[in-house]
Image 1 (spheres, rainbow, N blue to C red):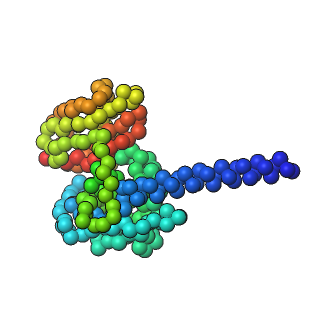
Image 2: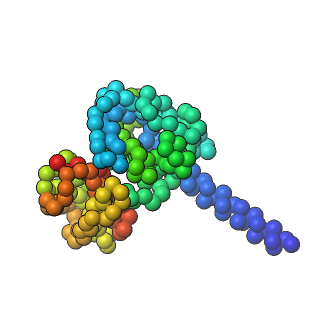
Length: 236
């Protein structure tokens, strides 16, 4: 009996340790990346691959605080809705078409929807419903909003965007990375192209995407099969 109690206590402590680790990761992500005020750049309807700039510079979303249960306080003058009114549950990264992305509650279209949270870089934010038939919005950080800008060096930049025929990747890949690739998806999740990146170090590499039709695509850079950069790409 004593042995069983010891095992139960050890399991309980281990579970508590794992929960504390996850909670710490979520809090770190919120404080270092998400917290602050974001100003709208563009609205998109994923199903129709259509974007506009209605509300640009006026619509905003502010993430103000996070509690011990990982509920984030949200203030917005836009159309996002959350299951908990002015709060949204923030989750550890989940696998989506963008790779592993942070997610929040959403009930705009279906109760099981989530909002994918992707930072294209430290000053650009992309929120999208994970059903790929809903809406998506891109934001830029309001640097005048107090208390929140930490400088992070981006390992990968993808440009130009929008593009015509060619895009370029500028990146630094450590020698310790065994596999690196650039993958291109449609907004419905279909893998259209996967290109291995053999070089290591600081490199700029061009890709020809002339065969693509005009529209919106998702570019993902992976290191060791893990997405480290995801960005919407607009082909003119």
